Length: 370
Image (cartoon, rainbow, N blue to C red; front, side, top):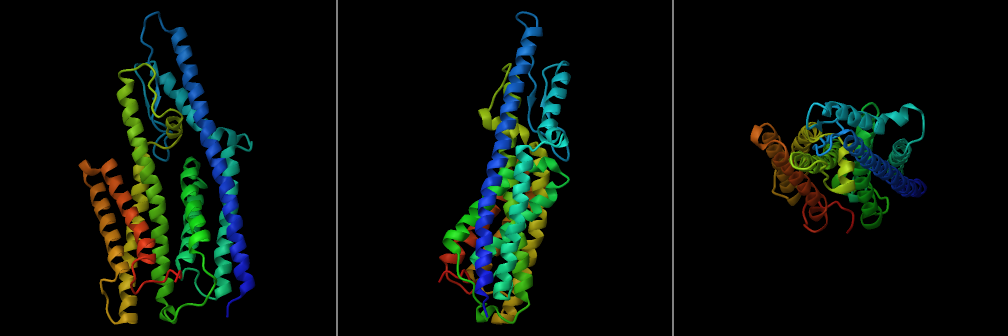
């Protein structure tokens, strides 16, 4: 029996969640914009001070920040000579001040405002998922709409939990909330279906809790990993260009205001390590998704493997992520090449979730879209 009142509460909670995520995204964006403006002003101020103090005709060294650092570092800086140490301290201080200085003083910064909004939205997001489950008296992941709302809730919970102590990760808020908001908008406009009972083929099996639950966690980690891998590629190119220009120009610039945004983020090496950790756990989850799915298939259809489109594409995802982990363990394939494989794996995830669910018919056609 479906509780329509709870189903309506769930839908309303998710709509309000989208509004709060929009406001949080604006806050995170404003934080990045203001920090990039500060970095641009600080770079100009350092150049002016250096030009005033340098002898006439002398080449002025420039410190080039290539990442605000993270768990493993405090902002790499290239300096032209010994005087660069002072500039390095200035850049490091700016990097730390942009994320912790204002917070320590107790003022309401754009980042803190965005983080509070994102936290409130995530709580409401989880409430929406839970009330959907209560309304249907089953797990809230029986179709595309429910899978999307549940997996994005997991993404936000993981992001917020890791950002509690490692506050430098909050600078990634724009790039995490953005994809989550996009998926929720698609879910509320294209994939939404009325609350209903499970189809007969999904009833009376405990594997729907285990198999699909692990698949949701795997998908959520793949989304986070793709975000970090994308930023790693951008940051690596940004650092490489700045290093090349630092040897040729007095005051190198790259990508303008967006370059200052990348200066705020952790370095490419920190992002690569974070991406590897996320994808390592995701790979384990995809492995158990395959194993548990095969066991469930044996119970439901009498065979472990039948080359169903969903089975095939899940196996492709597993292969690509296995190739990524192997590449990451090989010295000459680390960095951008390995990140490219990680993004290829995410493309396979997206294809599996969208095209396979809606276009290619198979035994796993549970999108609910008819």
